Structure formats: C-alpha cells, structure tokens
Image (cartoon, rainbow, N blue to C red):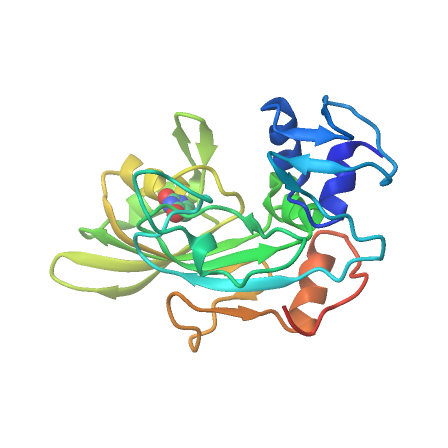
Length: 250
Ligand code: URA
C-alpha cells in the first residue's frame, strides 16, 4: 500500500498531510527519507521528525469529536503570531492524530469537526461530495432583494464562480442584519468574499452545521464532545463509507 494511504488508515493524519510530510522530507521509513509513491506493508519503522509513529496492528476504532471554536483561535497546529490553536483545546489521544475537517478563519466561531479517520476527513472536505456547510452571518447594512438573489444565482470570485444554496434573513437592527446561509463547498474566506462581492462586510460568522452534524446549543465555546453512534453512522454514509467500529470514549 502507498505510504500515505497506509499511515492515514492507521490514524496518522490524512493522505494529503502525509504527502506533505514526504515532500518536506520529514518522514523516514526504516531510517531513510520517504519518497512520494513509496510502498509499505506495515512492518517498517516510521518516524515523523524525531517522533516514532506507532502502528497499531489491529483494526482501529477511530475517534470523532466536535468542538465549538472560540474567536481568536487558529486552525493550524502552531503559528508564531497567535498563541492559541484549536488543537491545544482537544483531548489528547495516544498514537493517533486529530484531522480537522475544514478550517475556519481566526475570527470565525462555531462548529469544527475532528476525526482520526483521514479518509473520512478527506471525503467530507472534497467538493465532489457536496457536503452542506451552514453559517450564521452578521453583516453591516441591509441588502436589497435583488442583491440577495445575486448571491443565490452565483457571483464570479477571483478563484471562480460561487453561490449560496440558501439565504434566510433572521434578524435586523439599525446597522446590521443577521442571515443564515448554506453552501456546498469550503473555499478560503468564501462566505465573507461572497458578501463583499455585493458590497457588504461580514462582522460576525458562526458555523452552525457541517453535513449531518449540527452545533448543539448546549456545547459551550472552547468545549468539545464526542459524536454519538447515530451521528457517526450518518457522517460515514454521507460520503459512501461504512463504519468499521465505534469507540465509546476518547
Ligand atoms: N467562510 C469564511 O469566509 N470564513 C470562514 O471561516 C468560513 C467560511
């Protein structure tokens, strides 16, 4: 099996992450720097930087959690500019890694999904599965009906056309209006860029749902919870995978 597929199946990141480690020269197999396309059978020793990657010989029970992201947390493992990373807030797991399903901007709050199953994460993020993302968004101003229609019809952004699947007005004040929007892809800053394209600035953005998973009202910011069996099964089904085994704890 190719090294990226093998390590992802053992809970060591996603295939793309492993490919990145290989191209950065950070992964060693039996003491030699790994190359793109290396084939392994699992008897080898694997080191990422100086850390040995433990290969569990048994079928893994993957872990899946949701996290309610705080404002000011970054969605990468470390960044010299910002101290707090969402990964710092996650429960520690032995011999596996959390893979994040879709990033949020530093100022965006709400639902983040993490799994140790790299294949599941890849499929949930891949545009071909059309997984629906659901956001609450507050913008400065009061758009007209025709402006809202243009968001549904589609707008050409600098990386191609984009559109919301739905736009629902939720509340309106003197300066701001709240909407709930859905879309079926997750390009960088896509929600903000769509509003900006029609002349409105987003000043609050909260992710409420990702595919089958909804942010529970009871989950406080900075807290996580395990997905239940039903949610896990629906998540796998939504990307045409089957659940192999479910762990009841972390
Ligand atoms: N779209 C954005 O503009 N920002 C996010 O954080 C997520 C989606």
